[in-house]
Length: 71
Image (cartoon, rainbow, N blue to C red; front, side):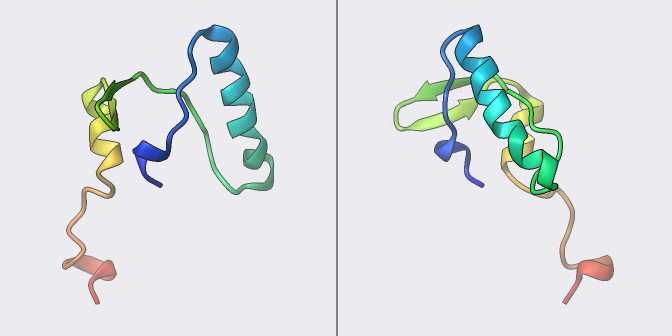
């Protein structure tokens, strides 16, 4: 998914509701371990504030040309 498609919760009540909604598909094993992250709006983009989440938004950090995933 793309972080710019994220929904931003303003306040604890909204964050709790958003996390509850995101957790529902976990019961069907559609997603695993949803959690909230801190973001900020920069123009039209939503940007994570922590480096760990910046890395996660960029996708896998493995070389796809090596190992079993190589085509």
